[in-house]
Length: 54
Image (cartoon, rainbow, N blue to C red; front, side, top):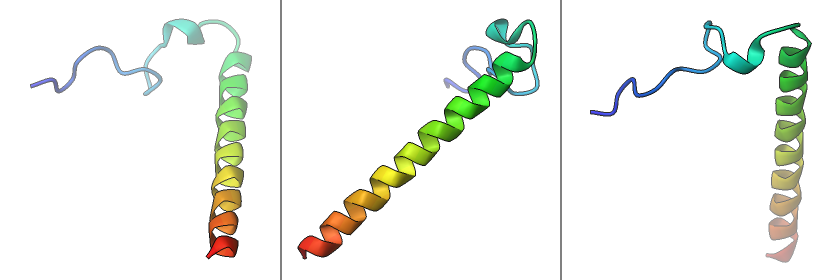
């Protein structure tokens, strides 16, 4: 149960917010990459802090 609930967003289909120029898709990819980079930097900082502590 619960499998296939709702619509799959952004997987080959037409997303409602993806209508228009592909610039929005590029911007969404840039935002996702920025979030990923920030997450990796935070993870590395936390790992270094924990490693230096003990």
